[in-house]
Length: 451
Image (cartoon, helix red, strand yellow):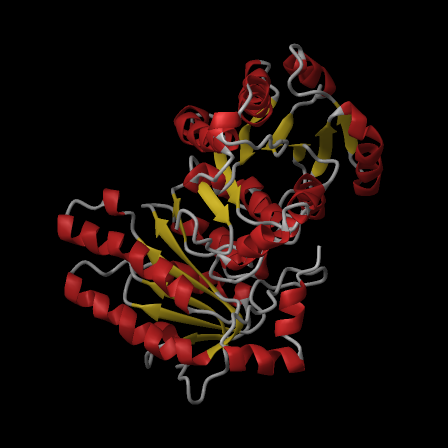
C-alpha cells in the first residue's frame, strides 16, 4: 500500500509546500537491500567514557570502514568534528560509566555536537548497565535515567533516524556485535525508543551474511502479509523454512514455499488435535518457531459477542501456547532454539474496540516473560515483537482518517512495512540472540501509543 503523503512531502513541490505550511515532513526510511555487505553505509562515531566501547572496537571495522571518536586520542581513532568530519550514519555512546547525576551532562555535550553532523536515516545506540544489576542506588538511578534520555532523543532526532538503549549484562560484551549489527543497520529502520537487555550467552553467529544456515524455522500464518515477509527474510538468512497456514490458504502457501525452497503445512491451529498434527508434520523438529498467525474481531466490550471474544483468544493466544508446549513435550523444539511471538502495541497501550485483541497480545508478552526462565535452561530464548501501524491488506481496509492517524502518530510520521517486522524476528532468531529472552521489541516507529 502506497503512502501518498510521503511521496508528496518528498517531491520538489511538496517539500516547499509542506515547509511553508509547517506540516510533518517524514523522511523516506532506508531499509536493508540485497547485495549489501556491511551494516553501516557511512561513518560511525564512538563516544562516552565507559568500558563497553572497548568491546566494540575489535569488530567496529566489520560494521563500516569509517570509524571515528569524539575526543582527541580516544580509542586510537581519528577525531570527528561536525565542521570537518563526514556526515554520521551511526553513533554509539557508551554511558556505562555514568554513576553520578552530574555526569549526565556528558549526554548533552556529546549529542549536542553529534546531532549537528547526522546523515539521513542515522542510527544511534546508547550502551549502559542494567540498573537492577548495580548495588549503588545512585548509579542505578543514573543508568535508569538513560531510558528517559534515549526515548526523548528518539523524538528529536528526525531525518528518519532512530535511537535505542542497550543494557549490557556482565559477561555479555561478546554479544554486542549481533545487537549493533541490527540496531545500527537499516534492518531496524522502523524501530526506535526501545530498551533491550542482553545477557551472557555462549553461542555466536558464524556467518553474518547467512546467520541461520543449518536452522529449520516454522512460521505460522505464513501465506501472506507479515507472515510471508518473515518466511522470506528467514530464508534469505539461510534458514530452511516450514510455512503453516489454514487449509483455505493452501495454494498461496504452497506457492510461497516452492519459491523459498521450503515446505507448506496446511493446518488449523485451533483444531483439538493441532499439536499432534504439528508433531507429525515435523519429524525432525525445528530450531525456530515464529507464532505469527492472528485474527481480529473488533467490537467494543458492550457489543462484543462471546464468539468474537473466544475466536481471538483461541487463535492469537491459546494456540501459540498449546503448539509450543506440544513441541517441547515431544522434544521437537531443539535445545538453543528460538521462539518469537507476534504481539502488538495494542497489547501494550490498548485500543478502542479491541479489548479481545489487546488481551491476546498482552498475554503473548506475558507468555514470553513467564516462559523465559524455564526455557533458558535449555538455551531456548522466547521474545515478543510488537508491531505498530504496518502497511498490510488489513490496514488498507481501515477508514482513511483513522489510517492516516495511525501512520502519523509516531516519531517517524509513517507506517512500517512487513519487512520491518520480519527483520526484528530474524534478529531474535539468530544464534547469538539467545542473549535476549523474555523481552518485547516494538516495531512501531516509536508510536505515541503506550510510549
